Length: 283
Image 1 (tube, rainbow, N blue to C red):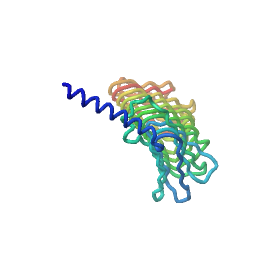
Image 2: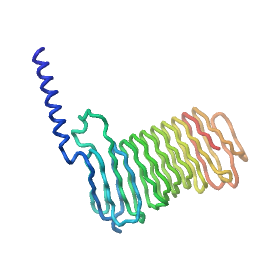
Image 3: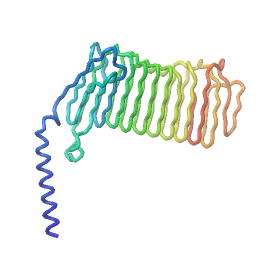
Image 4: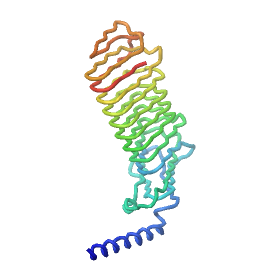
């Protein structure tokens, strides 16, 4: 028994020595910068971050600049047509039992960049205010954390959320794919096509103008779909277990416990809804 106690004391002492030595590691704290040229050959900008509060800031510049303040390992890598910014914990940070130290990352990108962006948020918080920025494709993958996206125009938007919260304000997209397995998705002032798959969680979508079809598959959770009063659509909804409600007056309405069908306005766009468990509210 004494031998076990002695071994535990030795391990504890070595741990504290190790922790103190880390505090003198200049690479683990303070402010660091990285940059990369954004030429016409760059097709993709990737931002892959975890356990950090990050801001993506478009401005009048020709290159990308990333500034990290706090512990962590940041890299800015150029590989062919791709520029990637990553922030990950260093391996010994997983054993750091000291109070959480806030890390902030600011990524400055050219406001004239119009190609693809891929954002992967493992945890933490991310803000991206586009200032009416236009992109070809924007894909967002959120593991755990919170993400705010504002004022963006894209040809293709892809959202994959396993957990966490995403708030979007003012997004125009030709196609929008939303895959929500857990968490919350809140979209205000959206214009474009919608393909949504909600397996668990809550999706709230407010559409400014109905310009294309909407397909929603809900296996568990709740979807709130807010459409403009002059929306022209044909509604075709099926329910296994749950409810679909529609506040719009429908022509040729067919309603039962398992389905709802009808037309509003000219019926120009299709709205297909499938609910295996949960609720969809259209108003």
